[in-house]
Structures are given as structure tokens and as C-alpha cells.
Length: 485
Image (cartoon, rainbow, N blue to C red; front, side, top):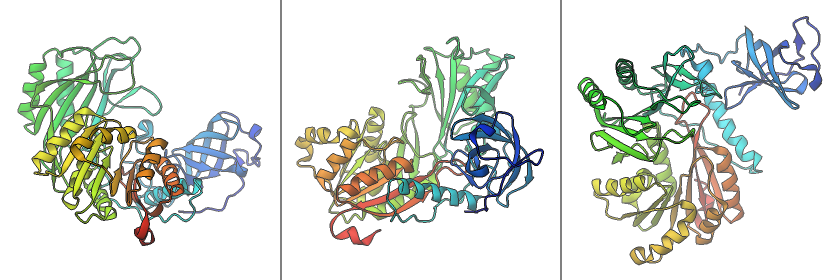
């Protein structure tokens, strides 16, 4: 990480800008140097020790900034002018990134982005008091753009009545009209353009969040990169889409790779994109992809990593850490459609997966059948209630005492009760995959307190140019403690 000695800060009149909170006021301008960056993409300045988060700035910049918000312990500012650019600054190739906010690191070189992500993972563990943590270099798949195999586009009318399809502006529900994205798979843009033409030609009512009127809310696209199969899903506040047959005809004729077209019904007053009910218009409501040699059926509600190539690298490391020899019972919690567990099933005696989404569980069962995997079983329920689920499964499974556990929870991490239950089972190895270093470090600390040893933490970049990072770490007991894999 680039370290710049902190210098005194001066205002436009070259007067010393002191460090008192009361000195900073909204709309003040000052010249300062940017010394750090957070995972939201804000540069950080510290004039006389006071933290200022600066939109549009990166470490190494000397910039004229304008204060737009002042709080007791920090302020927020935006760049007025870059006076001396950082050596890490690169040209921004996205016209809407400043408003969208999705790409936190769109203006920094990738080597520096990697160092920021490694540092963020390290700091998460240090905040938990885990000072002996070893962080491996960030692994990525050499694909910094067009890696996302899934996109959800909100649809709205602008104040002038124009159709807007794209992304929400940062911290708002104002839709930025943008038919392309540097992160999305390139096959999505032409399909989105065709859907736009359909909406305009047939005057499809667009949903209004304020009045709760209208029909179309989101357009959702997904691709199986290994197979090329594409899914199109339209989220509606209603029971049907006018002229749906014409849409199916136009899309399937122009884009033969589209194998599934669905409506998703979401009538709730909510920020959640998808409702629970699907209406198939074309195909069987699913597409297929291959990951780590496993053929996978993917439905619209199923969790599936958005960066397939990097996910393969992550899962290969997870398999290495699991250390399976063919004798172990492998328990896959938060298993989704079974992608992680099934990729390791040939190395285990038995695989048991638990997932809360019923549709995903059915997919996991079918994926096992598709791949001829006969030593796997999947159960529907919350992973936090895994003890009861496995107790109920005793008739089919017998006594369940896992040797290796795979954890891949959502961003909130694992419930303390689940970690207590796991610790009582005393599996030899727990391979913890996480999309949130903060909750990972918190949960690892609890497992260490229960007698587990932490191995090296391996960060993986499944979300290049954004502020997100995936990590995997081994928690082990017994003789393998000393290996620190």
C-alpha cells in the first residue's frame, strides 16, 4: 500500500486548515492529499487527523475537495479538481460508474486494488484480536471485466417520462439508464436492447415505486458460460405480461441461446427483487452450466457464483483444504444447488447438504443424478437448524458425525448457535468460505475459542473492480492443527 506522509492542509486562501471539528463546514473547499481508501471506493484524507471520506479520490492524489457533509467524527467530500494525480490512477472507462457506485475501484490499477483487498481482509481479523493471521496473496482469474454471469436491471420512468433500464444510482432508487456494463457478460446488452424495443412498441406499463402502480419492475438475465445457455426473467407486479407470446417469439428467434423465459411475480412493497412465484413462458425454467467438471442445473432463485472462472479456483482451494481421502462424511451447509459439495463428492465417503431454499434443494438432488453421484443426499431447512434436520434424517442416514464441514453462509455469517453445535460435533476440519471478511473473522474467533486452529486465509477476487472479496480458511483440530494449510 502506498504510504504518504501526512501534511498540513490549507484552504483556498492558503490559510492553515486546523483540525477542530467546528472548522469544517458544508461547502468548504480545501486542498489535501489522499492517504488511504475504503472498500466503498472513497479516498480518505486526514487534515490534522480528522477523517474526510472523498468521493472520486484515490490514495496518492493531491486534490481540491468540497465538503458536502459534516459529522462529529468525520466528513464527506467530493473532488473538485485533481491537482496531482496518484500513480495508481487509471482512466475510468465507464460513463456511469461515478453515479452507479457499483465499481469502487474503477479508477485504480488492479495491483493496487488487490493490495487494498488483502489489507481489508487482514484488518477484519486484526479487529477481532486475531493478530497472528496469515493472509495469502489475492487470487484472481485474469478477467477484470465482463465476468458476471448474472444481471438484474431495474426498470423505471424518468421524471420526463422516458424509459430507464439500468442500475440504481448509489444510495437511491433513481434508475440510471444504461444498457451495458463493463462487469456484465457481453451477451446481455443486445437481449436487453430487444426487450427495451418490445416494451416501447407495446407500451408495457412500468412499475412506479411511489404510487405502486404499473407492471414491469426488473429484467433479470443469467448465462451458463460453459454451455452458453441464457435465461431471461421479467419481474412483474401482476399475473401476466401483455403480448408475452410476441416477446418470446422475438427473443428466441434473434437469440437462440435463450433457453428459458419466465415471469416472476412480485406484488410486495419491498426492495427485494424477486418474488416467490414463477410463470414459465418458454423452456423448463432452468439453464445448465459446468463448474469444476460438474454439470449443474440452475433456476432463477438458485444461488450460483457470478464469476464462474474465479469460483472454480476458489472451490479447488476449498477441496485442497478439505483434505478428503474417501473415508469422510462431508457436511455441506448452505449448499445451494450443491455446486461445492458435489465437486468434492468423489473424494468423500458420503455427502450431506443442507439448504433453506426448496427449489435449490431440488436442483441439488437433480444435479447429483445428472452427474451420477450416488453418495449424496440433500435436505431442506435452515443451516442454523442443522442439528434437528440431521436428527430427523437418522432413519435414512444413521448416526451423523461429519468429519469435514463446508460452510458458505450469506454475508451475515453463521448464527452463534450453529457454531456451538458444530464445535460440539468436533469435525476434524471446517472449511469456511465467506463473502464478508468481517463476519468471517467474527465466526473464526468463536471457533478458535472452541479449540480450533486457524490456517492461512486465502482471499479470492470474484468481484473485480468492486469492494467485495471472497475468502476461504481452514479451521482444524487434532494432528492437522500444525499443518496450517
